[in-house]
Structure formats: C-alpha cells, structure tokens
Image (cartoon, rainbow, N blue to C red):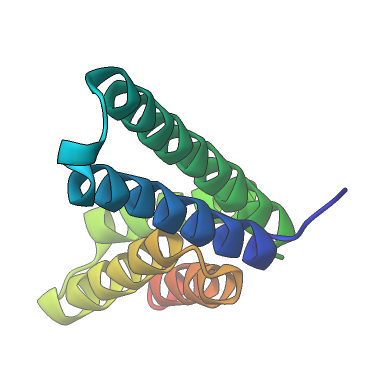
Length: 131
C-alpha cells in the first residue's frame, strides 16, 4: 500500500496521539494496574511513539520526493547565495540574500514542498541579482 506525504503525516499524528492516550490511561488507572501491567503499557506507549517518529521521518522523505525542487536545485541556490554574499557590495543586497535563505530554511522545516520550490527559486534569483 503506497501512501503520500499528507497521509503519512496524518498517520504520524494519529500514532502519536494514540501513544499519548496510552500514557494517559496508564496514569489514570495507576492504582488499578499491577506493576507488570504498568510496565507493559509504558513499553507499548514508547514503542508506539518511536514508530510514530519513524513514520514522520518517512513522511519527510515522501514530501521531498513529491517536491518539484530537487536537492541539487537547493544546493545550487544556496551555493549561489554563498558566493553572492562574498561579493555583494551593499548591506541591502546581503540582507536580501540572507532573508531569502531564511525563507528557504523555514520552508524546508515546514515540510511544504511547494514552499521549498518557491523559496529555492527566490534564493537563486536574489543571489543572481547584481552578482
């Protein structure tokens, strides 16, 4: 069964939420549970959380795969920005390049493929201006 990144992120949220509910149940019923039952529930809670993190890692990979922007394009844009910062003669231009790089970093962190593509292009374009 193949899933896309949105489905993988949704699955991550659901697994994480279920893990938290296991923990809540364990604490709400602490006195009713035996030590062995508490330990078992805790182990299951952490295993579920770990698997949720694994699904999230896979979801990020899927999001990058789905993006039109390749890692090569991101590398080219950041390399051009780095060269531009070294050669630009005004603070305004350096600030513009740095601002574009911050936008790209935020887009990558948000795992939004469309925003990554848009911001990588912006870095590339801004770094090319007057370079």
